[in-house]
Image (cartoon, rainbow, N blue to C red; front, side):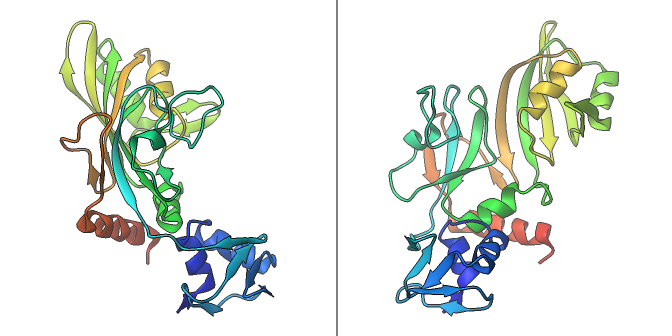
Length: 241
């Protein structure tokens, strides 16, 4: 037996908090009866649970680490007809990308149907580290690196890079190591453009405790049990639980 909102979250419906809201709103039924109080428990294999009239069945939880190539979008489908990252992982339960990469970015992307973990890893308040290798046009000066760390106003909001250093420098371009604790859309590209160093390549090499390692571009693999445990450990530490 497990609490209803936990069952819903693990089935990929939404985060635990959002599932509690669905229950309070009377949108959840158990065995045909509307439930509006929290704390109810259900048997995952015996009870029939519905949200807005649609049955919820908990599928086996799956976790894939993908080395995303350029040109793939981090969505289930694309109106422009571009290939999606779901084409690069085995068919099975519906998966959600954790911490999306834009079409022109590469590197580590986690895909899972674990709705609760997905929320804990992507919600801004948890601030899990993301590490990147970024090739830029030109070589940023020490002053520009300091400005990136101090923060820049991008679209009216202050954006910061936690750590940035130069890994390799040539006259016309450089490779940077960048670590973020926030994950705003196109944040790295916008910040580097603002200091005069447009991004040429952007590769995510780490997300929290997960590392890209030697996984080849375009390939995916299931997470190892130890990696899943490390993700949950990081999620609980960030949540203070």
